[in-house]
Amino acid sequence: MVFSSMVFLCVFLPVVFGLHLVLPGMRAKNILLVIASLVFYAYGEPIYVIVLILSAFGNYLFARLIAALPQNKKWIMTAAVILNIGLLIFFKYLGFLADSLYAVTGLSVSVPDIKMPIGISFFTFQALSYVIDVYRGTVEAQKNYGKVLLYISYFPQLIAGPIVKYHDVELEINNRKQTVDETGKGIRRFVAGLSKKVLIANTMGMVADNIFNASAGLLSGTGAWIGALSYMLQIYFDFSGYSDMALGLGRMFGFHFKENFDYPYVSSSIREFWRRWHISLSGWFREYLYIPLGGNRKGKFRTVVNKMIVFLVTGIWHGASLNFLFWGAYHGFFLMLEEYVPAIAKKGGRLKSIFQHIYALLAVCIGFVFFRADTMAQGGLFVKKMFTGFNMSAGALSLVMQQLTPVYILTFVCALIACTPVHKMLSRNETYSKLTYVFSLGGFLLCILSLAGGTYNPFIYFRF
Image 1 (spheres, rainbow, N blue to C red):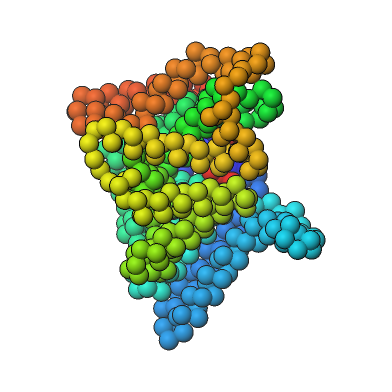
Image 2 (image 1 turned 30 degrees about the vertical axis):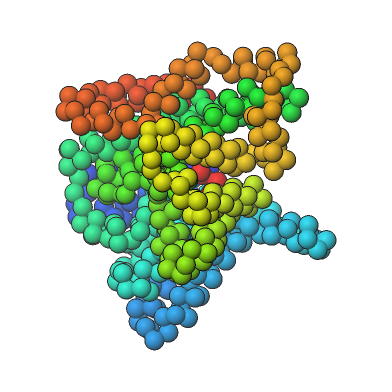
């Protein structure tokens, strides 16, 4: 586990930020951030910081070898891919593969109970992108291991992304500035993300958990919809909130990361949804998997096959479970549908646009039901109840009414508004933009009060 939220907010972050501000020279600042990042990651699970350090060092060596031995770079790159993916398989998928082997062949393989390092999918993909870019000649191999370690382990985005490419931060690792204006904007962005996580995602998450954990006999159509919509909002505000915090913290220290979310729930197609959702991951797969497979350069059928491969991998990237694999294939199916029936996603009049938004949101919502469900059977039951659970017993009614508290209803309404680019449009107004600093102070105080109360506070994407 990482630092508790209160320790991070009240001790770790102020100390690291203050030291970074006063230390002279970029070398001292970088050393501080490396040490802080390793301490941050090692807290509670010190053994796994070794995995992180070795992963960074291994990829540093691969990049140096590619630069030194260009005639052998293909073999070196192949070894880098095998070792990085092998690391993921060992920690994340070994048990799943053993269970799958048993299910298919009946052969039982004993697998040790290995706890997965937090954020391994994120830092492995980030490290691998660096080596691939060196192989392609996009960036030069960094000779200073400390800078590579900082790039891979930097604490604001180490645990749950966004996945940052080396060429996007290379200049700022070597030379960056902390200004009052940038620090203020960073703090504001960080607090916005913290508020998304603590005030919205946590409230939605408690209700989603209550309904998904309820017995099948207590699940009605109304309850199923409340649970599905609550989880849909929870996962968005949890993950986009963490991304906002990472972008805000990065800005406070002089780093500028690319946006990871762009109001995905305003999408009118699944294709558009993936242009707006987890942009760094979809961009990673597009650049390092989809395009090398041939992209859309080899005809429509091959394009569809390539997209399906990408989304099967996207699903399994999220976790070693049949649910995640299905979720990836499910999104791949809708992308295939939009490829062969372009009228579904093609822009039209206002009425068509409304139906397109409903189609996209419904598809995404049902997909997230299977993403959240513990088993495929539970996901199937949930979806069935959403569309056929018209009867409501006294127990089912009681379950629903217990969730519909004033706090939940108010938070749900605020969440719906926050899913739209209302804030983005209002921010163009200078007065509103200044007021957001006041709102940030209020949001931060509310978050501190909530966290101090020791309330429900999971981070969904830590497990990835």
